[in-house]
Amino acid sequence: MNDFQRHIKQLDPSPGSRSEAAQTARQVAIYSLSALIVSGMLVWFGFLGWGFVAMLHWILDCVKSLWAK
Image (cartoon, rainbow, N blue to C red; front, side, top):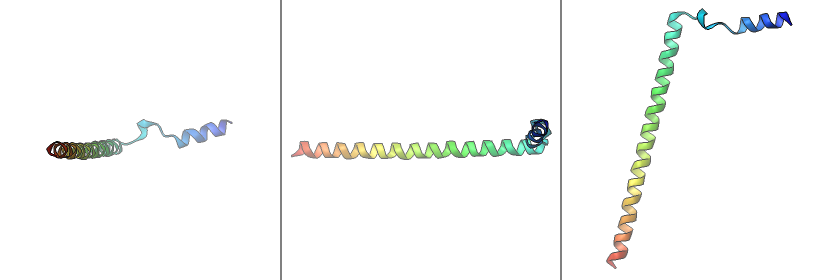
């Protein structure tokens, strides 16, 4: 059992063993992916809003055409 615990410690390096450059690169990658996800969500919500406004215009046109008859 003692050998098993030593094996786990070898597989799980401590956070302090990473170099400063590796930590910086990891943070840059995380922030870049976060920015990509947020911008994708903003674009998606923009398309949803645009579709909602187009649907409202269509409904108003249908109501106007019913009232005109």
